[in-house]
Length: 246
Image: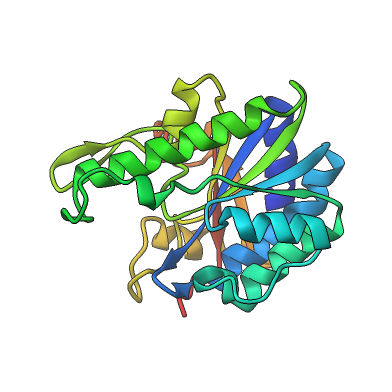
């Protein structure tokens, strides 16, 4: 089992873009996933990363933060939460540039139509990928970027949504010529108490996780589980003893 920082370092040896997800549900979140984000910043910096692209950012917030080198007040939603602000502050403290890539919901098709439709979900992920690809295109060819997203936007394979295919941001980004290395932190997070895709593995690998401070993971090709080795949605998985949503 490897530390998250080691997985990030390996990721940047394979791709100029590493995508890591955090786990939130509305304003509920798993704080551990953001703490891991802070913990891996030095490894990413050592790998040459100087840009942090974040789903939650909006352009005005990013512009002011990049200018003042501190997160502005009044960001709203996730940007008002202390652990998210700490992650942003750490990146700014390293001299990084924040990159917003969220979809512009003013351009959302369908007007006042249902927002919880497969078409709407696909539109958002596609817009995020386009915005991120455009931002990457403005960097030097060797410029490296850490991408911070939520839920399962990091997936490189489709999901089903209301019975229809849902193509996520990382898959769209790959289609646009920027294949990322994806690290999935969600597999042991309990969005509902006592339930997660790899809950049994928390006990199975407890000793290894404890030796790494409570959180660690595998590259997909070295995962002990054949099922997860065959899952091409991510390149690495992070498991943890701390999986609470709050």
